[in-house]
Image (cartoon, rainbow, N blue to C red; front, side, top):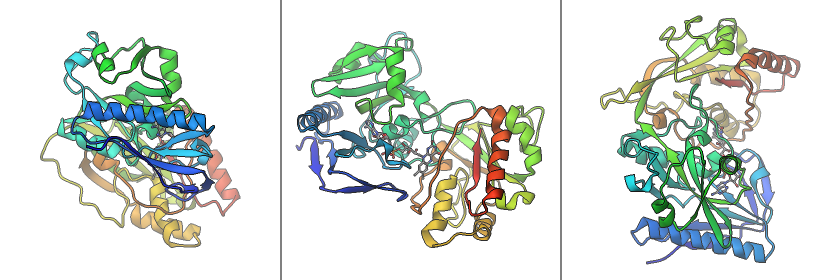
Amino acid sequence: MPGTVIQATNLKQLSNLHGTFRHPIENLFNIANGNTGRIVPDYNATTKALQQFLGEAANKNKTLRCLGSNWSWTPVGYANDWILHTKRLNILKRILPEETDPSYFFEPDRVVFSQCGCTIQELSRELRRLNRSLKTSGASNGQTIAGATATGTHGSAIDVGATPDFVVGIHLIVSPNRHVYLERASYPVVSLLFVQKIDAELVRDDDLFNAALVSFGSFGIIHGMMLETEPLYLLQTYRLRLELDQVAPLAETLDFDAHPLLPFGGERPFHFQFLVNPHDLHNGVYVSAMYKRPYREDYPRIVRDFSKAGPGEDAPAFLGRLTHSLPVVTALVVNNLIKNAYAPYNDQWGTLNEIFSNTDTQGRVLSAAVGIPAEKVNEVNNLLLDLTTARVHLLGFMHIVL
Ligand SMILES: Cc1cc2nc3c(=O)[nH]c(=O)nc-3n(C[C@H](O)[C@H](O)[C@H](O)COP(=O)(O)OP(=O)(O)OC[C@H]3O[C@@H](n4cnc5c(N)ncnc54)[C@H](O)[C@@H]3O)c2cc1C
């Protein structure tokens, strides 16, 4: 049976999914696991191959970074010399009771161990078979778990946090002859048996763990991650149009009881966001609200209309459709597209993975996200609105996820 394979592609230039930049490199390498039919030995063989590769890079004085799905918007995470494409490293291992620390006593499959290249979509599909789900994700689900975590890909659930918040262990290749399994001392999850199985050295340290978690690829090669999951759930979703003045007090307080504007009045939604099209403000903003419900088999499935932005579809992917087909985009074109495609809807159901699903739109788009305290949301939105009125050629829109 073949073992781990690392192949040079001799590619000299990398561009990201949305073609926002081109970055010169010396070489891109693809890595794939061996397939003996036994996942732990295959995983461990890849650990060795990664260490060897790291050693080779160090000996030849090459800078090295990993690449996940290549969805990032800037080349800041790229090395100039070698790039190792890890997306095919997609082993997922269930964790046995004896592989968890005695203090970590929860229901089966609460934690799973994912190799770095598993995409959010792959993980969600596998978890569904176990009646489990990720706690949250970004608006699309094609990122790898290592890439999404390394850049703090934010979810959009008000009370959950972002991707790194459900990572509870990191298997890190730190040098050609050292690899560690890192977890918080304050939150031990695995037993020594698990650490022995992957042949690693156990390090329990809160500060080191927090530093390595959102690392932008600069804290060693992440080979695997322990993920905390939850029972499979459904989202009941709505998109409506409301006046910005109505939404503003809710946005900065998140006091749903005091401002019962959403479909279930004072109920706190799982997800709440609004999208502001500065070129069509007088018709209101687009408000999305999603409520978490227990999973049941007979929920009405969403029938996708590919000419429309479905529930959870993210703004960058959506704008990408436009720039992909049109050389020049004007405010009128943006308005028409949004009116037609981003229409309000009622009572659509799906799992996290179905609502925040994959996108293969590859138009030229730039997206940036900035975290701000909720109480500043209206101040920042007003500043952005002033900017767009002052510079009519600025054609984006503001997507506010609370
Ligand atoms: C269509 C689209 C929708 C998006 N939606 C959202 C969203 O809703 N919310 C949000 O926050 N972001 C979003 N993003 C941004 C995206 O989530 C991040 O850029 C994320 O990092 C992409 O994951 P990736 O697997 O493509 O990582 P890459 O872009 O390939 O890599 C990102 C970083 O992770 C490092 N890395 C990757 N693998 C490893 C590894 N094995 N070991 C060490 N380091 C590694 C890389 O070196 C790099 O620094 C979106 C992007 C696109 C294109």
